[in-house]
Image (cartoon, rainbow over all chains, first blue to last red; front, side, top):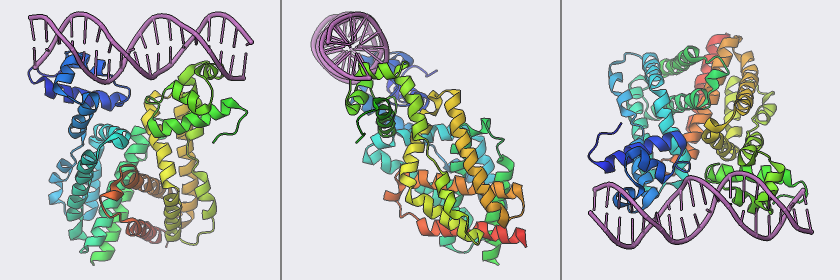
Length: 195
Length: 195
DNA sequence: GTCTATACCCCGATAGAC
DNA sequence: GTCTATCGGGGTATAGAC
């Protein structure tokens, strides 16, 4: 799968995929070497700290980038539309994003302060940008931020339940109904506040 | 910590605690034996399938029981109050519940169909009971269920962000504001619908 | 830079004594 | 029912040739 040349880069990418699927603890250095088409000795040439060193860089690579979901949302004309479109966008890429987040949540206790800080920065930046999008409909920064957290948490939590925990296989998932109701209650709040 | 006698029970409890803290893959059979004050041979006497057999029973033991959070909520007099009180109740036990859920999410792919079904059953039952509590304020089953999912997802997702991913250490957590806004938008929806 | 070869440890698991 | 003792294998890591 990886192009030859720049073995170091391949190792990071391949490791993050393996960690995503099997978790860090269940992935061996031999398995990584095999998947990267080299020996374990080569791994130790590129990563002095061994498996932990690979983890640190794989984390950077695996962090989900949420910003692209917000870019196309600058032309919305109502809060209802904004919530609906963000939900639909995250839905479409939900599986991949959640498998990245799932892995980070598992490995979080093993990460150093720098990696944790980077992840926090990503989340906070996303929330800030989402708040910027919501604010025009509320005319109140504090409420915009609360609504942005509600959107973020709901979509995240819903994905954890129905995708990560596979609930969609046991229970008819209320997808459309869920999104619409979420958009509706938020939009109602906006109308009440801005008029 | 565990009382002597009934080694088998101790093994399950101790294992689920170790799995919770370190994950299944990172916990060895020897570590379990040591913590349980016996040898690995004793483990294999009680669990024919070895480590996997212990996992199966530890999962049952670790599943969070959400029902107690709903019991005291039958005397609420408004939807606003219901949301606020549920949020506050889950908050107080959030850490412990989330560490259980986190473990189950990690190990979910390794579980057999029976264990998955049991977990799904717990979630669905909680949602159903929560819907029962919400329904009187909406007079519409479908909307009550959507609102119940929104409550569940939001609280769950919020906990994942601020507790499991430690965001509370990097960002002033909007706890009170978050809960109040959530309660408000849901209560507004209820009033709009039931009148 | 990447390999071969290997050290050393801990893993899960089991046989057989008590 | 629990122990001692041990096996085969795979785990991380490294020395040294090319």
